[in-house]
Image 1: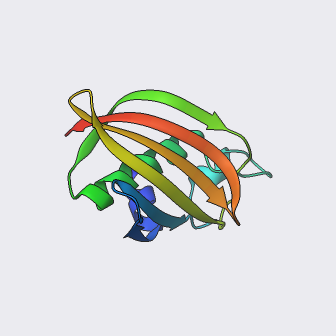
Image 2: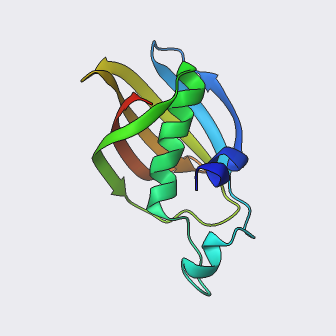
Length: 121
């Protein structure tokens, strides 16, 4: 999964406010994960959405992290294979690592809100 997320990464930029960033991803519709999730009606698994937030934080901060806790993972709409996904995040120091709050959007429509606690890997 980590390799699939890294391969889907298109780029990132720092935000205007301290600790903020935006990263973009697009998952190839031919990825094997879409065959089983779900046959005939594929969608991006939530675990990939969580992993995108971790990866985007690593790219932004230039540090490697492991997920220590998923504080919130509210998936409000599906993400389909091939869609361009924007991850808008804010990282703050907390709990011996960083707390990251992120919104995942497609075409400016929010698809998920995720909050993670990440610890150094």
